[in-house]
Image (cartoon, rainbow, N blue to C red; front, side, top):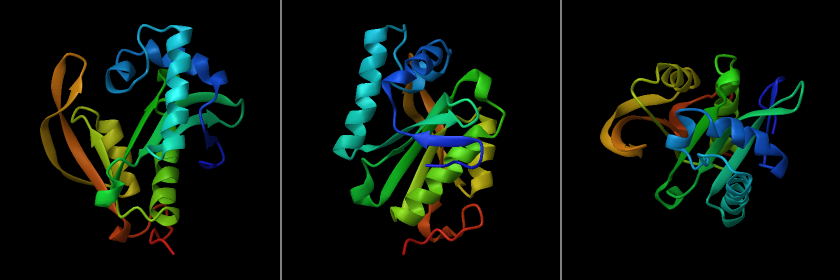
Length: 184
C-alpha cells in the first residue's frame, strides 16, 4: 500500500529483522510494543511471526513502513481490530530514531486511517498517545483526530501505569487528506 511518493506499507517479512534489532535498542519502543528487548534473532523472528498471526487471524493489520528510495524499513503501523464488534478499532505506530521528523508517521497514519474508514468501513478509529508526546498528538490532529480526554493510569509502560490521551476519528467526521471517508 502506497503511503505517498516516499513510503510503502507492506506486511512484515523475515528480512525486517534489522528493523526489529534497531527498534529493540530504542529506549521507548520496547516499552509500548512487543518488540523484544534485549534483542535476539530468535525473539525477533517470533515477533515477525506474531505479526503474520495477527493478520491471519483477523486481529489486525500490522505493516512495516518502508522508505521507497532504498527499500529500507523504518517503522511500523498497525490497525488493531479487537474492538471492531463494538464499532471501533485502534491504531498504533512507531518509528526508528533516524526516521523521526521526516513526515513518515504522518504519511503512514493518513494512509491507514483513510483505508480503514473508506475501504473497511470502520465506524471509529482511536489512538492512545502519552500526553508528553506532542509530535504524535500534532500528527493525529492534523489528520483529523480529535482529542477526547485523558485516561488516567490507562496503560502499563515499563514498570509504571501511565496516562494516555485518547484521540478519535469517526467515519462520519469528514475527509481525511481531502477525500471523503464514508465507505461505499
